[in-house]
Structure formats: C-alpha cells, structure tokens
Length: 116
Image (cartoon, rainbow, N blue to C red):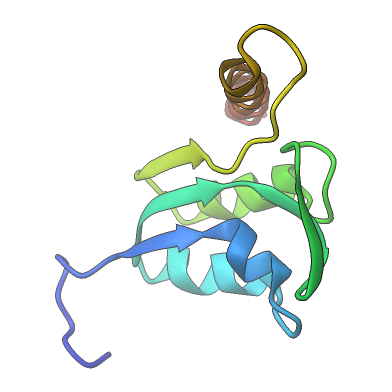
C-alpha cells in the first residue's frame, strides 16, 4: 500500500504464515493472490504454531495443500511455486530425495486440479 506498483510483489512463504500463532493461511492466500500480489510461493507445510512447530513433508502438515492450491488457482496465480525447507529422506542423497518427493507430489496435485 505504501508504494503501489505491479512491480511490487511478495515472496510469500506459506509455511511461515501458517506457523504464525494467529494466522489464517487460507485467508492470507485468498487476500494476496486476489490482489495479484504474489510472485513466488515457498510451498511448504508445517505442523504446529510458533514456538512449537515442525516443518514436515508437503502432504502431512496442518495446511490442506490442495485447498491452498485451489485458492491460488481461483485467482489465476501464475507465479512460481517452490518446495521450501523440504525434510530430508534417509538415503544416499537426502536433500535431493526430499525435494523429488515434494516436486512429484506438487506435480500430481496440480495435474489433478487441472482435470477438475
């Protein structure tokens, strides 16, 4: 509101907003995506609220990620969704495996929504 411009957009950390004590993640996504104010989403899930929260896999936290995707889609969000702070999987490439899991889940979810 201080400097309105189509060039001013958010790097919206969905996980950080979700873990805030008094936040409503769905209302925040609704508000900012409706304004066209989001350029980049850290698409991650958490369980709990500050100060007791944990970053979890995209499909196992408190946030209904399909509901979140539906809100972004409703407002024609065309920015970037990136898995962020993805938990590691015990294997030879723990970070890569965690990212692969998140990206595969995201691809499947978005494909499902496109077919609705």
